[in-house]
Length: 397
Image 1 (cartoon, rainbow, N blue to C red):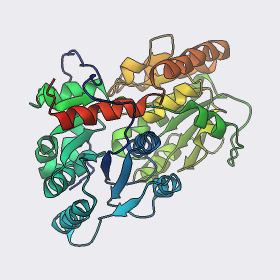
Image 2: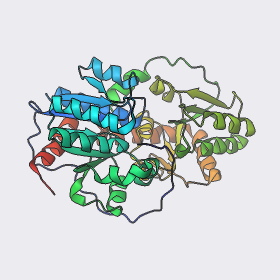
Image 3: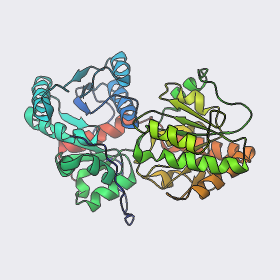
Image 4: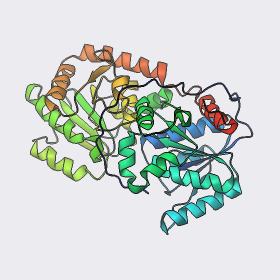
């Protein structure tokens, strides 16, 4: 049910975004609620981190939460289990039909009120499982809808329309869903959250990675897949170093693009003194604390977690206008929005920020404050329970 192939998409005219949730449900406590969350993976990733936040918030409010995952033994599984949240697996051999049957059997035993998919390509599983156990279904859109539809292949339209409701994490995903024919009544907006207390505690730990000394560091973070366009980051870094030779690059992440990016770095003469390819790391906050600025060059995003972490780490941001990135980054206040395919402009901004430590500090503080003001996990359980309550009560507006 997935085929990770990115696709470009045309722009659309802005439309008003509805409130995240209404006041139709009792949200002070989730005691007595039983919820199943369906995940395609529990690896290090943005959607998976948001799943952890949602599960923790619901569990703390008294909800009986169970996670069903296609994968086994990945990063967030142990963290969920440490919080007392059971994780069950349905990624058996036999393909989608066998997995759907196993999930349906497990859900009939559990009898949840709501089955909530946290990945787009597992929306079909959530819909089928909910029908099997008499529950209501909620799907998700966690990235640009055109990208999600393309990588889901022939299953894309079914994933979009199978569930009773869709939770989206960005205004861009909301607008794209409307353009694809999804009724507004089916959509709910639940922005990502970031726990700055946890981030700060991890940032205070020593990072076990030697980095070049003597100059500012520009960092990019994410899975090394084509849609993230880290080639733009490397090209801009090489151009910026022609004018600011002390500037260093740090690329954190791993994935199928690593070999190609390593070859590009060699072609651009970005040796170890200029670029550190860090691979996948679990000490990202500690590494961000040593950087001057963050660069995001993606073609497609929803509400990018890496960008929020960079802002919370007091880094000014250079970003393409992918997903809600342009709405998050305030021009000349918290960073700059740069064109998709203009490495010269990206390099210009990198040089300016590398040469302006005081300006970077001011922009970084503004970025941190924006995250504190708009993306705190406080109240997350109430927001999620309000959405569930609306679904259970059949509220359509």
